[in-house]
Length: 449
Image 1: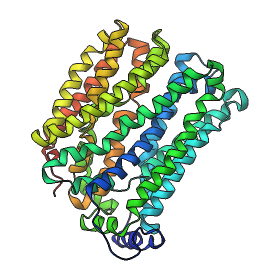
Image 2: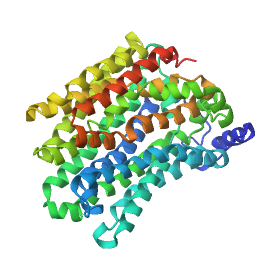
Image 3: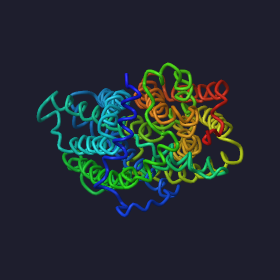
Image 4: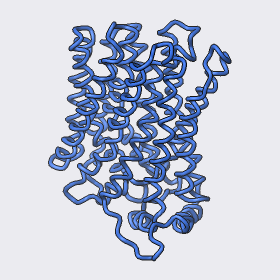
């Protein structure tokens, strides 16, 4: 599909297109330190997760009332989650589309256009009229913007996480593999804080009318900051030289899928426990509180913000553990803990208020520990020749299988059978992770390949 000639062409574009954007016009190049890469990675991931969590929270608190007022609350929320899942379906498609932009115009152009699309789609949602104004056209536009978000995220891969892992100190690779994942709890904490502030500062009518739009405006501003932070690295000759040295260049797609399909499948299954848990502690508690309990949404958001802080701490702990025990064993420990946790979900959610809050905080803590090494697991499934392209496509599959439909499945199971089935659904993800780890032993520390 994409020839080696095109890959060489894209490499020359990466080197030559940024002449006007160099940070060092004197020609004196300094080495790019892992710390510099880490900052760019965290800022980039934070902005992406912020965009996604703004949409995820709005899928519960806003969209059912604004875009599906003609449906009962449960059905409206289910329809909202269908649209939520569209971005995960679009991600692999976006990766393919932006691959061609990379081949012909270079990495910097690809990243700029992808993040511009992401910011524009997110901000565009803020201006959408509701169902009462334009009818079903509002739903169609919301779905199109959500699909565009997914296309953009699929094209926003810049190679920074892989480069960070490959340039990490020998005995700190678990720690450096954890750093990109910090964007998830930090992005959620920022999105939840904004929604909590707006939700509690104005009347419910004003929130539904215009207040919910504010976090989407903020998302565009954050994307602009993230774009310049990432281009600061991507647009430098030092970064391009590192990519060449580490062979972090797109591999021919036909060869990739022909030779790496097994690694891609197992790499997508290996982090499934954490991906299944991902939206069960971020999006699902909000709809559960709104539809099946009388817990205040404000309190749920505050507890989730506290939980995201716990996730940051357990992510750091996971990095330390992985450096001592290895990534594969760390992932296995996380999967076992999630399996145990899944059995307690009915007790926690159907018991006291404290139990519901414990469900959130414990879930976030486990998510942090398990998710911290998920990206490293995907990357380390591939040798250097296929690491850049293989990690991107495998990550897309992991998000699609593990997280994209999780809120929809969890809410459907809860409505029909109760929360006990949600625990079984989560346990199945943990089992899948353990099976993948048992089959693919290459998920051990392999970043030095």
